[in-house]
Length: 283
Length: 319
Image (cartoon, rainbow over all chains, first blue to last red; front, side):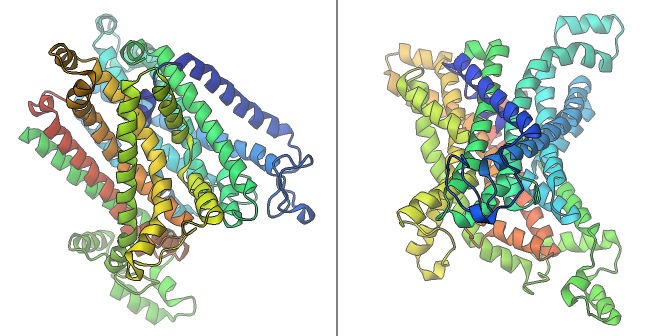
């Protein structure tokens, strides 16, 4: 989904998209950083006297069923999103990129085996992996990380293999081989630097997908557990309060949408900037 | 071509086998004794032993796996611990909700995405394209369960046109049942449509620049005729592939959306089974869902071979 979805977005206004995406992503990361040191209120402190208040000067985004400040919870919830997404994408890169590189470098049986492994992993949508892990270990943020991480491995393996194959046919690779360098060394020293741009773009897209995935898992109760604030869990708690406190549904959802939108715009913009082939063909 | 199909078929069977083995292994290493779950904590040891024997839990791992896969092949998934009915019966009942939901969502997302993608590509850079592209960009970022809650807020709580959740059952009549599936289908379809719109737009743009479309225009075809007769049919090849790949996201989405709307489908059954530690149901559903993804991917591969003549010569690589 991700590769084609993002590839499809190239078009006019791409550089504007890049700037807007960069600004939105920077804001998201800045909020996450600030929340490490400061939030307007304690995000887990309950205050039943102030429960279910709408947006006001004291509580900009209102309060929840237990009187907790929604803005503080959203700010603190960004940590969970960043952490899960970072580690899950890290797992995808850490395992998927070496696998994809190996497949492209060796071809033949190893290539076939790695690609079939990728097919096999694709058979498990991350929610299914999370379900199995929850059945095994109980719910928690680690589940979300493992489930989304597993989902990311074949994505990076495929992208790395696909991007590496043409590089392996280039003259400078032939020169490196003539100089006596081994396949592994060529892959690390010559092929990976040439596909770094593709991997950076893919990482941005997978980061956005991981934030959506973490929110879905937390919403279902398979991810972050109380009292840790999480955007998905906030939406889960708001579900029965849609009629009486719609702000509890609107604001955490907007936080997810704006973050993912920013990352997608950044990914699309980077793709257009770094992949001249796509720019001349589509943009 | 037959060699390619044979290779795909072997990979397909191996993937299915590996899937069943992984799921079976994970469920076997779970802590907890299924016999104790069924009989409760106060059960006598000899009763537990007898039930374990009856369930085949005293047999070796390999014997249990072979017995289970043998049963699955003839549609016997075992009996649910909590519902005390065959899992196949439970699945069939719940599919009567999940399947229409998935079909409506696919139809709706395709009906929205393909015209939008084609219009955006044909008006590239103009207001129509910018509007559709911006909406699609936003749609990709919207979590389906949040969209579902907003739809409930507006159309159920606010306007009272559709129910906020639940399913009356097909026996209650077609109209109320379909009405209960409208908001879930829309919530599921719109984010999928956003992705598909972007893919369609990109694919049509690419084919519009190809020689055969230029030749068609040079022969005197109008821009509109060249677009619909030559560019769109060719652009649909990658779109069909993405549609197939989206199937697994759709299944995942169905699991989430059923929980938002309290729909008694496969997704809700899965979560109830986890909560009740009904492992035989969890195991069966996970294998069934994974198998559905593998089957659809296999069919997409075959469709790809059928649609794209370059692959039939064996020179192409579907990877």
